[in-house]
Length: 275
Image (cartoon, rainbow, N blue to C red):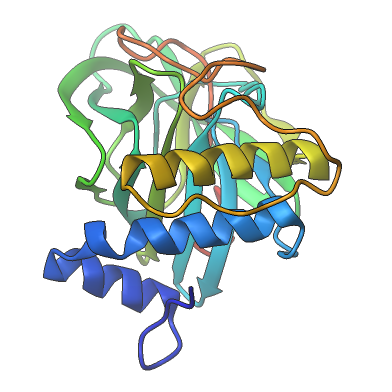
């Protein structure tokens, strides 16, 4: 299934479907097909283990615009983080939930009173994230919490500190749109004594990427009563049945964000905090 607007932009087509209220009727079938291509080895896209605990499947990069599929999967153990899950983007995020329950907690960052965290600036070059420890120290308190379910859309503006978790079942997936904003930075909160450091983004090996993609494509098909993908994994075998747990556990929580790290769930071009 091909999906783009009259200018050939996937971002524009997805944005228009969400704005028109027709995303539930179009985005799941498109996402299923994207993931089926990954599972069958027909896509050159490298699936990235993101430090926030999900898999990032880049779909499009156009200037300040980007589109990714984000998958929290029991098929692949999540990447470790080095600072915390509390972060903010340099870009505006719009996400459509394909399946699962995605919980966002906004965070109030304060510079008055005893500091508990240091602000890190996240800069990306190639497949390396540089986390620069700044002189800014803060403390944070949990703010508004919202849980978004299958077929729902949520947005987060650039500069809004937050953390994201999966509730209930161990997996979820979203279509993530990003629009870069001028003058913003990608920031993460980390321990006060953590120095500047670098983290190399890791891609999934082809077999585990294929298993996770097929599992997710089947979940989407089951969620929206679509034709299941007809895919044979290049390596043979089969992922666990859709809806079942197995492999590495996806990150879940019913508690406020712990002091772990992810620089950014970023579908936008790589100025910093890339996916």
